[in-house]
Image 1 (tube, rainbow, N blue to C red):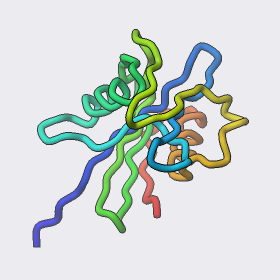
Image 2 (image 1 turned 30 degrees about the vertical axis):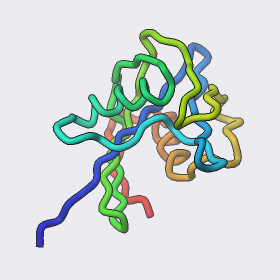
Image 3 (image 1 turned 90 degrees about the horizontal axis):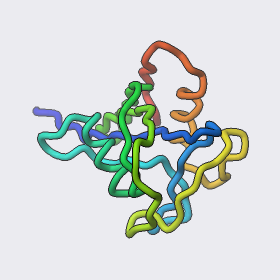
Image 4 (image 1 turned 90 degrees about the vertical axis):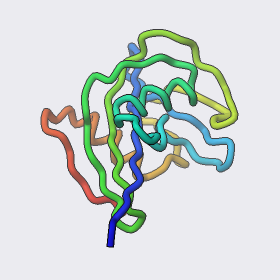
Length: 135
């Protein structure tokens, strides 16, 4: 049997005060990192740049791969990247009803828990790429 995976790519974007950019979804009362599904023919690092632009209006460059996360129950592979803003302005859109930077110690209670884990991995400033199974 051929196994098909979905691939996701999410960005951990920080500002000059080291606050983390989060988006409040329009379809649920939950904050998440900007990102989403990688399109056919697209590399994950290209997908994260496109997704951040679509969701926030910001142009970013990938600085570092933070981790690869497997979600075996959904057959998902997710790449988490540390990214830096190079241009653009935050713009509310159909995917995010609010976009804001948060201090790492005061993240919203209603954040996607898997994304919280990825933020913590980034803040640990480990030089090694994290490889984790997330349930």
